[in-house]
Amino acid sequence: DQQVKQNSPSLSVQEGRISILNCDYTNSMFDYFLWYKKYPAEGPTFLISISSIKDKNEDGRFTVFLNKSAKHLSLHIVPSQPGDSAVYFCAAKRGGSNYKLTFGKGTLLTVNP
Amino acid sequence: DAGITQSPRHKVTETGTPVTLRCHQTENHRYMYWYRQDPGHGLRLIHYSYGVKDTDKGEVSDGYSVSRSKTEDFLLTLESATSSQTSVYFCATAREGITSPLHFGNGTRLTVT
Image (tube, rainbow over all chains, first blue to last red; front, top):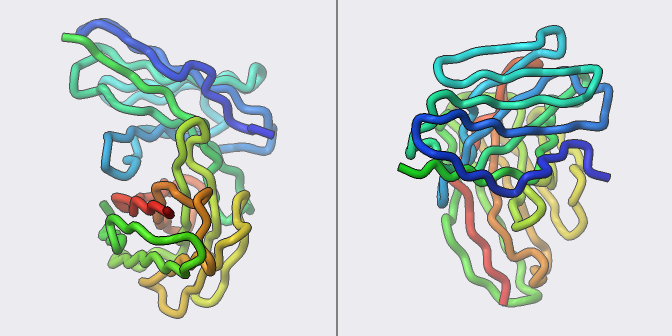
């Protein structure tokens, strides 16, 4: 049973445009959500996070939106740059779980010059 | 990132042989995790540790064991490697706290022939 779902395996956008990556979850006990970026042959690196008590968190070009009622979050990258090309993983955790992260399958973002 | 070193970085082994992967951290993080990444599956938790000698199973723990005798080291052992354990293995660490992200090492690529 997949608790965190990223239904788009890949996404291609033009440089300078907005990239929107989506994530859905099924476990209502999740209370903290994170996005990770992963380049080939490297480990995932933390990008941005959001608590379940918020609906938006912004860090530079990256903004994460959370819709609790829909159990949906999205990552917006504006403007997209070729260096943003990577696999993006959505992840979730809940309190009292030893901070384990449950990951989605990832979305490969390609930003074309 | 976060002073995490995984060894070896690459390994090829034969079916039925034992294999041990090592994760070493210099950040004194309490929590440590082993994940595997496979195409179409994202990152899945194998085992994790919430302190020295304190470990527990993740979602794909069959065929794996772990040990943590020191804060800085977390070992993952495949007692008798199988071809289904061919994967990229990532170690991660985290501090206490729901808002603390996991920090990942650069992975070990294991091939079981």
